[in-house]
Length: 331
Image 1 (cartoon, rainbow, N blue to C red):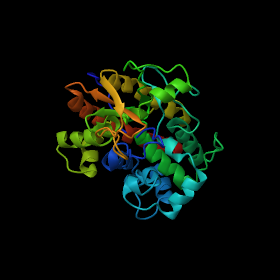
Image 2 (image 1 turned 45 degrees about the vertical axis):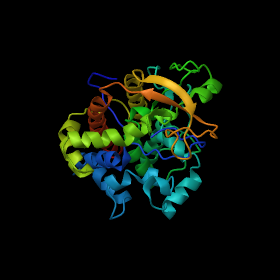
Image 3 (image 1 turned 90 degrees about the horizontal axis):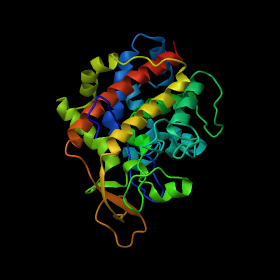
């Protein structure tokens, strides 16, 4: 696992064959990103423009969960609003907006390579930036209103800083991590961004989304996202603004998270491939009637403590970068 200063957090490729929930950070992580960003845009034109798009009872913290809640009841335990339903109807590939699945061994995000799609997290973030800047979208399949573009940016800035949302593990029949040679090989070896890597009954992706965030909160001696954001604000203020135009930033962030994903995935030991568990619990005991498979893995001894440190660093970075992005859109 990474023993250095790099850090992390956030949901991944949901295959329709596995209807389980992946929330990326859980609500605590996403809210923390929104809260940090809200603090860092206070008194700016960006704050004014954000308030114009949000309703009176909405904040960047509540907005941070909107893109997950639009997926359906199981993601937020609430029925999607009419606004969410309209967004889903106009954006049928919205599930894919949350991630990209590049083999973790690669060193940079490059459009058109295995694991990338026109609807992935980089492309949708670029188009959301364009919408908020009153510029035409690059992908005509992305149909975003301005409020939706804001919701997408707030959420996906969190997602793109979760290494399992960018780098993915592909495993051969010999239980070795590989870089797929083509799309067909990728499909048969894909672990769904860690969802199908099972540390006993827990998927590695879910471990990053929730367990490590909660562990980071305990380490910081806080009880909720408001307190966590306050603790991380000093660290967030030290994050520098990216150079160049804002539409280029998501690709740079994806490359950074991809390199981080290698540090988090390469040290994992694959034990065996087996039939998946029932229904929404693929990592549970194998269902003999299942046609799907998972991989049992073993995590390094220090994976949890180091991962919690990574989470705090990535949340700080995501919150700061969201703020700098909003300020770049509305200087």
